Structures are given as C-alpha cells and as structure tokens.
Image (cartoon, rainbow, N blue to C red; front, side):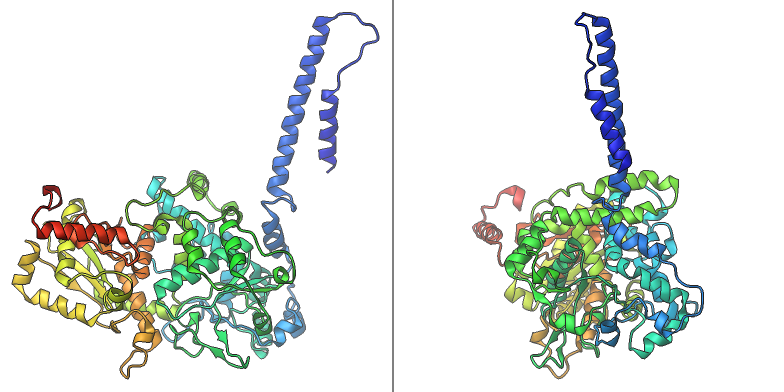
Length: 634
C-alpha cells in the first residue's frame, strides 16, 4: 500500500506544471521541462503498471489468487506437529458435528484388496499420500500417473503419454490442454482436503482415532467447503454422463463446490433409494466409479440441502450466476436436478466463470510444473486453454469438439480399482494380441434404440457401411488386409446376425470383395435393451453391476481401434467419440464417423428428432425406386 501511494504521488508530481514568476518566453527551457514531465509520467505509469501486475499475480486479495491463497498456501504452510499426537490432537481439524455424524462416506480408491499388487502403498497412507501431492501433479509424474490410470485411457494412448515427448504440434497441444483441464477439475475437487491429509499422512497413528468414529480412509471434512448434490437417474449410462454428470461438474466448478452423487432418501428419512444402475451394498455411483472428491458432508446437511429452481440452474450453468444471496446461497448443500433443455442451450461454450475457474486451478499446477524445457509447451497450453473449439461439421453434436466437455466425461468415467482390474482382464482376453492400428470399431445399438430414438440398419447394411469407411480411409492401412472388426452390442439378434454373416460366403460377397474377422466380449450380458427397466424383472437378468461392467467394457474395447463408426443418436456412442477426441484411444490417431454423416444416404441413420434427415433419406429411396438417382449419389 505504501508503495502504491508513493507511485501515485510521483504520478501527480509528473503531471504538475512548473510556474515562473516572470512571464518570459523561454521556449527551450519549457520544452525541456515538458519532456522531463512526460518522461516522469511514462516511468511512473510503467512502475504503477508493474506494481498492479504484481498485485494481480501475488496479492491475497487478487482475483487470480484468491483461491490459491485461501485453499492452497495455508494448507502448505500449516505446521504439522512432529510429536506424537493423542486422539484429541488428531481430530483437532474436524468439527464435533462432523465427527459424530452420521456422514456421507466414500470408498477409498487407493485401498489394497486381495488382487492388488504386492508393492502397492500401505492402505492407510496411500490416500493421504496421494492427496498431499495434489498441487504438484505436473512436477511429480508418479502421482499424476496414478490419477491418469484411473481413467478409461489405454496405456498406449496419447492421453497417458503426451507428456513424455514434449511435442508442440496442434494435436498434441490439444491433448495436453484436455488433460490439464481434467487435472484442474481434480485439483478443484481435492484441494480442500490438503490440510487434513498432511496431518493424517505424517501421523498414521491417528488412524485409530478416526476408525473409532467411523471415519473412512477417504473421508475428509474439508472445513468451509460447500457441495452440489446430483441424483443420478435410471436412464442409460450415456444419458447420465452427458446430462446429470456434465451439469454436476459444470455447476461444481463454476460455483467452486464439491460434487456429490448420493442416493435419494425415502420419505421416512431412515433409508435411501439406490441408483438403479448399481447393485452393490451402497447402491450408488461408487459401486463402479471413483468418488469425485474426498470431501463428505453430514447426512443432516445433505437432508437439509437447498433444491435449486430451474431458473436458478439455468443462470448458474449458462452465465455462472449463483442464486441470490440469502439462506439458499449460504446453504452448504445445493440439490441440483439437471434439465435436458438447459444442456442443449449450453453446448457451445461454458460461462466465463467456469473458464476462470479452470484457469485458476490450472495455474496452481502450472506454477509447480518442473523443467524449463517444458516451458514452451505450457505456454502453448495456456494459450489453447481458452481458444475456441471449431464446431464439428455435419451431424456431429456440438460438444464433440469441446475440450471442457471431454474433460468432464473423462473425470466422470473413472472406474474404481476393482472395476479397472476386471476391465483390463476383459480387454486383454479380447484384444490383447491385436494391433490397434489395424482394427475397425463397430458399436451397434439396437433393440430399444430402434423404437425410441433412431432408425436401425440390418447387419449386412452395417457391413456395407464398414466397407465404405475402410475404402474411404485407405491411408489408415486396413484396405488390402482382412480387417478385424471390434463388435460390441447389447442385442442377441445382432450377435446371431454376425455369426450367420461369418458363416456365409454368399452374405460376405454381397457386401463386397473384402473379408472380415470379428472379435467381441464373450462375457457381454446382452440384456436386449439399454434401459434397465426393460429387463431387470427377468429371472435370468444380470445384476446392475454386471450390466455396468459390460457397458464399460464396450467403451474400453471401442477405444482400441484406429478407425470407428457409430450411431451418434446414442449417448454412449457419442461418449466413445468424445473419449477418442480426447486422445484416450490405443492407436496413434483416431477417425470416428457418425453414421448420420455417411456419404451413402441409404445407410445413414436418422435420429427421431431429425426431420430433415428423414425427409432426405425418404426422397433418396423414392428416387432409387423410380431409378432416377443422380450418378454422383449411386
């Protein structure tokens, strides 16, 4: 403040004009004085600008560093006692209400189990050890790798290995940026636990004090934190990811709140209604996925949460404006019920408040990044962080190219350790010996999708479309080989059609000169519907967790091929496209084509809401029937 006052005084002096007692014309003297005043003004202005820049960058009241100062620096400067702590000291950072509970609880994503590798970290220190390294993920690859390994990315993917080459081409910088956005969201959701994690990590003896109060290894109070809770629905996984989870992470990042996916409470307030897509004992998101954050509120706070109105949700997600400051805004828990209409209005870009939050938490990581040789890469990433994403051509839904949308999808689809190990076994058994560069991905959604949301094709039509795509992308290298098709589906009818096609030379010749081989997951549950309410009542129905494992295996397998096509009327296929766009695929590059974009109009799949596609296809079929199709469209 003193320096600022001094600079302002200097500025005022530079602007003051010297007075002369005698009115004599001394033009040379006045010119010198004027030049001196201008020089002093320029120097003062430069000094003032430098001071303001330093304030903007480092001051505790700066809009850039308010979150770093509030959340980051105090936690790092917190002195953890070296002496042995008793139970009271161990619990000193936590409130009595939170310790007495009952609380929402987390599954520990770092805990060992019977199938864990022998050299894994000790179970009672691994969670806290991971948390204390949150600000330094760009400087300590080991801890960053542990987080990246939680995603669906293949070990050979660009998303996993992009930091190993420091390439600055446009595609690599894009993957860098998406990965930085993913890690920024991770920091925002985990940083409030840093102080508690440092205490627990330095004093493992405190574990007993927490166990006696039922506090889990990944349960942290994160004093002062607020939450946004979203109840997931019984719709398919793709719909939940692109509606409920997307809006949850968008609202959480924009308002700087912790995201929760709890289960609904029954009217008696004693038991809770489970998520229909989960069937483990807790019956919620964490049956199959890593919890979004280690921070957990009390069940009382969750029960008394404020339910946002639709207009408040719209303002929050589209302009970053929170509800008016009253009892609702001060409530530690907001209950957000996503609306599809809001999602459709909001596909182009997130609000400026969200981008600012991305920048704030990205700066925490970038300030602790190691290596001067990487400075050029991070400079390009900083610039690309807010660069506009060009809208995709033709049918592609707009968010297919949005970096923030892809980061949210990657974050929401992080399988827990048990699920990850089972997925790795499935992928290894199905495609462990295959070359991703020579694979063609063909996910097929049939059954209920043909009734409710889109048209469907016969299996022979799918194979015609596959042949055309392989011919169109000759540079990929599948042409001239026997392409291996990675087939995933929920339909027993499609599986049988594939077997008939493979056994019939005549059917294969109808498609063209190309021969095909197929691989698929023999453990697929094949429920014949993507909607769990259609099949959960059957006696031979799989459990919800078995079905979820099958769905995640399909997504992971479709990240193997270099060339793919899918029905983008399906949210699940759109997710596959997003993950491939984000660099999570096993091949060196990826080409995914929505079947709504096929050159052959007859093979295009029209979504039930796309009247223009249906009309164009109908006109084409009528012209074909009357044999008046232009040569260019035959």
